[in-house]
Each structure stands twice: as C-alpha cells, then as structure tokens.
Amino acid sequence: MGDTFAITRTSRKILAKFLDDYTLEQLNKVPHGFNNNLIWNIAHIVVVQQMLVYNLSGLPMMVSKEMVDAYKRGTKPERDLNQQEVDEIRTLLTTTIDQTEKDFAAGIFKDYNEFTTMTGFNLKTAEDAMAFNYYHEGVHTGIMMGIRKFV
Image 1 (tube, rainbow, N blue to C red):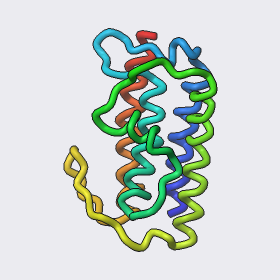
Image 2: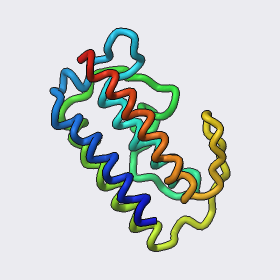
Image 3: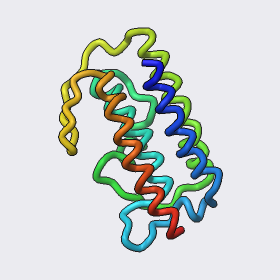
C-alpha cells in the first residue's frame, strides 16, 4: 500500500498549499453559487477518510465527534473558523495519514462494514476505502479549484 499513501500525501500537500496561499477570510468565504468554502472542503476530506477507513472498520477515529458532525456529508459551514481551528485541520491533514499508514502496517484493519458510497462505489475493505479516498479527495480538490476563483 506504499503507493496509496504516497498518492494521498501528495494530495494532502496540495490541500495544505491552499492553507498557505489564502487568508483566513478567504478560507472561510462561501462564494455565491457554492454551498461551502475552502476550509470546509479540507476538513471534510479529513473527516471522510477517517469515517471510511476507521469508523467502518469499527475502530476509533482520530477526529472528534464534533468535527465529524460539522464536516460529514450533508453539512455546510455554519460559522467562520478561527486560526487555531485552521491550524488543527492543517495538522490533521498529515497526522491522520501518517497514523493510518502505521495502522495498515500493523494489520489492525481486520473487520469492515461493507458500504456503498453515494456515487455507487462498493467498499468491502479498509483498502477499498483508501482507494476510494483518491477519488473523493480529487472531487473536493476540483471544487476548491472552482471556489478559489471567487475568494
């Protein structure tokens, strides 16, 4: 699974660049015609990876219940985030993937609750979830590329 994590780390570096290149105000701005903002998309990516890999494996996630409730599918930004919250999301971009790689190497993903995504992908294992995660992160990175033109 080394390539899986190399690809995911590259994706996460692209996401971190948004955090470097845009102000707190820009990260929080929901442009007209969009339902969310740059920082919501980044936090959503972190939360969904945790839900798909850990939660569906019956394992504890590395994100809080409050974070899941704020960024899971079907949510939207309810308030502006402060710099401390953005910094926490920046940290989670890398720490969650580092720990996930260690956990795969340790073989902790034994059980998985099969799940069909809203786009029709049928995930049967934690490995499937990490593979689907490429697609999910790519979709949201594309949305962010659209948002950035209006912030």
